[in-house]
Length: 268
Image (tube, rainbow, N blue to C red; front, side):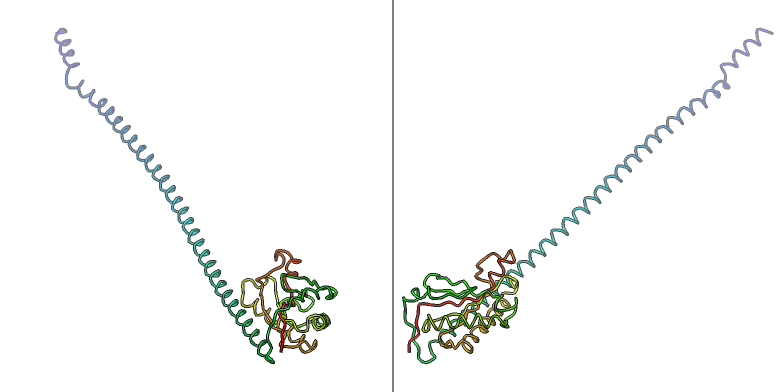
């Protein structure tokens, strides 16, 4: 009896109950492995998503930089086009102003020749009378074949104006007396110059110097009794500076009227 019981008990240890006990342990191990695999996959996906976010942010930053560079380039092109347009307009205005000044010179010279049937002849004695000219405060110099009597514009006009100031009348009276005394038959041109204050408006600079030259012409004829047929005017604008316009002193030097005595005489 005891032997049979032991045999039965030994058989129970190898029976179905033992197999049922081992199955949960195997299932738990497989579950843990699957969980670990899924966790690793999720971590890998999260890492990829993070990297994609970084890449996306970098692409947006590069796109913004490219957009800024494009806008800056477009602004620069627009500015250059505006500068080109301004330069072209100024060139056209300068050309028109020069053409107008040339017309004025031609017309005035023709008018000078026509008055009284005067003719122009050469005269080499003009240099000999240079030493006899002396007007306080004025620079008088020989320039090639001509003599220039330089009158500071600020002594005649307020800057940017063509109305002669009180002291300007005295100066022009002295100039007229010197012309009558030393150059009574010479051809004389009244040249008016200004600084670069109107450089952006070439026609305005020529209009100003035209008005200034005309004002001096009128005073020399009406007050100084210089024959009108002896005179002509020339508006130079800011085309012929004597000094740099970078300083106030240079600008003042360039604002001037020059009475230019030519070696030609008017006969008839």
